[in-house]
Image 1 (cartoon, rainbow, N blue to C red):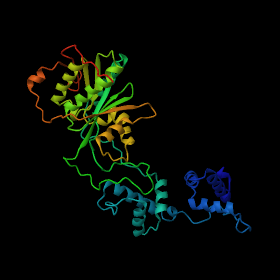
Image 2 (tube, helix red, strand yellow; image 1 turned 60 degrees about the vertical axis):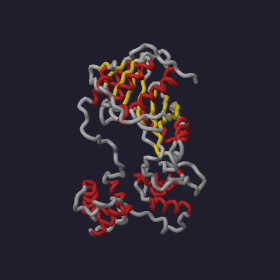
Image 3 (tube, one colour; image 1 turned 90 degrees about the horizontal axis):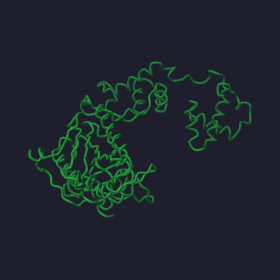
Image 4 (spheres, one colour; image 1 turned 30 degrees about the horizontal axis):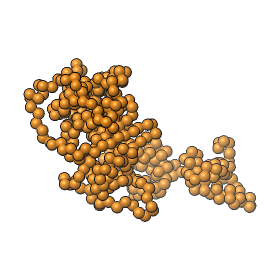
Length: 398
């Protein structure tokens, strides 16, 4: 209706809408109509105190008022665009190269060049030019993408569907970021009495003598259940395979009693990387102890963020313990185990105090003894390890 109203009726109509919306209504109406917040606030005052004389109720004729700044200074808009683009591209001649290109800095730079303008007006002009505040977007991978990256994802998806059709377990595995144990800062906020924040250390320098928590996660893709083995020693291939074995004995074998094989989706690097010889030796030991045919599919290099465990399990754990100092391993285990979501995620966590030595050598004889069958498509990424015996370990009682 605004085009059919005069100037006074338009601002009063906007004020009525802003008042009906309540808190935040002025900003919402200003963004929708293009009116300034000052105009809407003035109209709100008119609604509260209607004019008593005809002079105060006069209507401004169309086109009256001060001309827009961009009309008065047509070169200003081009200069503003040059300042923004030069600071973005890293132009060495830009006065804003080493500063934050905020509206205040842009207004100051324009004023120095003879274009008097306020920071608020700079913001409105930038919006009119199609600019908006945007954060960095993580989309650039280190190095070039593998030429068969997409083919590997298609192959992985095909295997997942085959396993799920046969009601065989499909798990996504990875090691979460190591966490310092002690009164250290943990990002996020939590509800506490006003003025009484949790006090933690000023610095969180890495100290080899300080205890750490190493959460290794196993995420059941079909059931939306997670298992986290919290280690205290080192993140090694033995720790990774041992965590999967603990998951199978305590959880996997109970929910998949008829399983004959398992599919493990893992990153290309880390303790469960496809180049780690000890990982394959430990997976062979896993197959021997469980009696399962273990198929491993590694995500292509540089694609660890696409691992399902990252955004279906680890992200929720981080949100659950935000703002809470992880002062002991027991607190880490309890916070992980208390993680739930509205979509049905459930997590079990256990503390693993066993030692996992580093720099374990794997001989060529051990590699030749593996009962491993590389797949036809990228056998280094996709392979199946069969047990050397058919006697499986029995799960522990709950």
